[in-house]
Length: 216
Image 1 (spheres, rainbow, N blue to C red):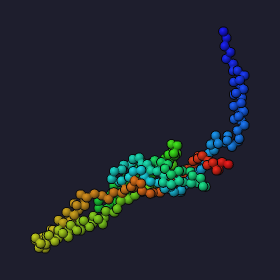
Image 2: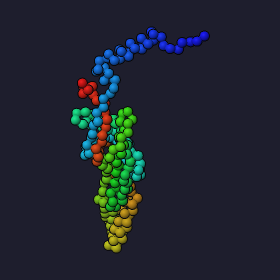
Image 3: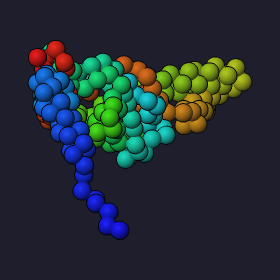
Image 4: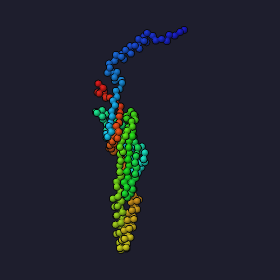
């Protein structure tokens, strides 16, 4: 027995009716099914508000450690939103200088190289380095050494006259220097969730869906 695999007249008619119905749809309905994208360019020198996800410290960080942040507010171009708040920035630590306990200030720097949009689209970006410096240790160290020397002088004069005062002063200064050496450095820290700004050093081009009001 031979089976006829060809479609019936009814099936052909039904398929034709569905195709005709799609062709008869208003042009506006068909356009809604195909999103329209606009190419927006955020210019170089644009400043983006961000918040770090976790702190970066000169005492703990290493060069090329990964850092992440969130865009704090929408970035707009000609009235359209190019980058929405909450988009993620990824980058690395570019500089770590732990500084000294007597003179040099600690420094830490970070730079971002990738923007991750809400749909996980990853775009390369170029930004300035965000730099932070620790407090200068000079005045604090001088105060510790000077204070210890004064105390040493007083105690030396009490116990040994002028010679004792000179010896006491030297011993006190040495003790003060040892206290500074034993103490911690003033770390450079970029705290988490602190409002920061980062400047683009190259244009950033993004394709974004056109808002309905702009498609009409």
